[in-house]
Image (cartoon, rainbow, N blue to C red; front, side, top):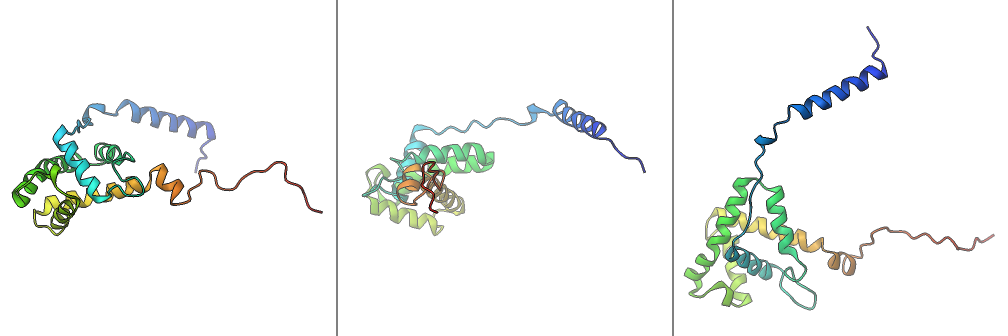
Length: 171
């Protein structure tokens, strides 16, 4: 049984790393071009505003949660899920219009909430139900991780415990 020296191990690891980089096919990974149209963006904000509305504390829209949701959808979800999300965001105004006989942008908060409840129950299809569940989860995650909520309501401290260099020592 032969012993491997440290130098041989480092050489082997360096060659393995270089080999991995050399044969990596960057063309096989196609960047996703996930952009919302203006109508889809407005629908997203209207639904998110109904999920976490403005009150005595800022809501999801004023804390910038739509940017978080779009970034998460673009960077963390597969192309199939992204396309499904875009399709449902495009269909929501039509579904709302056929059901309530008015535009979603002119609807009251209670009408939007009732529509969201119906989508959650699966009235408008499984794809819409799954997309709304994803949107709701990302909205809550983004809202709870904003600086305002974490500092003012969750008592978050960036570096807990404080250093006081001039503390008297009791004998």
